[in-house]
Amino acid sequence: MKKLVLYLIMLAPIWGQAQTEFKLERSLEGSFSDFTVDPLQQVLTISKQGQLKKFTANGDSLAVFNEMRRHGKLFRIDASNPLKVLLYFKDFGTLVVLDRFLNRRDVIDFRKLGLLQVKAIGQAYDNGIWVYDEQAATIKHLDDAGKVADQFSDFRQLFDSMPSPQLIVDQNKFLYLYDQQLGFYVFDYYGSFKRRVPYTGWSDVVIINGLLFGRKGDILYRYDAQSFSLSEYKIDPSWKAAQKIIIAPERIYLLFEDKISIYKYQ
Image 1 (spheres, rainbow, N blue to C red):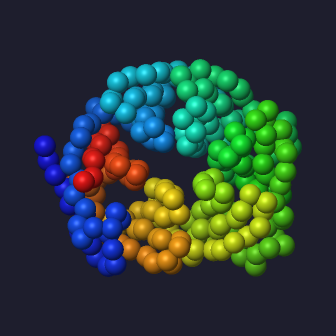
Image 2: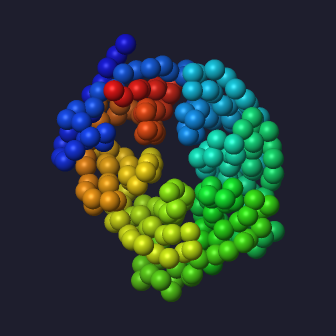
Image 3: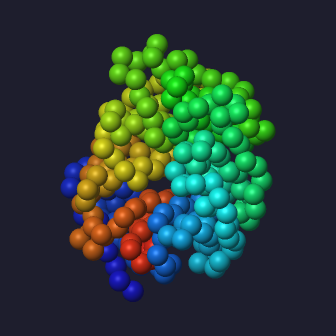
């Protein structure tokens, strides 16, 4: 099977070795517009026809959801909780909540909650949901029933340059917000601002145990929030055509025009 290597540009590589080798494990053939991976290494794909499909870690088809077009264009999918999949349809202010088998569990209309400009959503540690309310310029915490339970301070009072995050990630008792124009903002669960990491223009942002990963052109970045060190890696030339890259603890996933390629590192 084909093997690829990410070559070090500066500092230590992603997994702490002089060189990290990736071996092609398998590919999911198909024409996909987007995909994500949950903590169980299950892959959720979105076809260009609007079908959501879930595959096991071994590549077996597990479940299908066919009601995507009913709610408009999908803006964000969050499967960071493998038992609860969030589908956010921004144009209609609608959040669809699915169970592990992609059965519809709930539909939350943000407009009925007075949330008229929700720009970002994310899973919360307590089975609730984080949302960024752009109109109120704050993060709000919804409980499992979809009701507003708490909110952070107004960002306009906290920052001179107000962040407008596109991504919210809840991990290890911290909340990470990412704004492509201003960088990362880190909070605790009580809304206390901890730090800003000013790396901008990243796509395919992933956070793994305090490590911030992202992609900019043909460069992968890793920032260690503990040691404050930034590493850069030039991707293999054959990966440049990838429309999306997801870095996971044991594998790396690449979306191409006609497939999703899954590489395992060793």
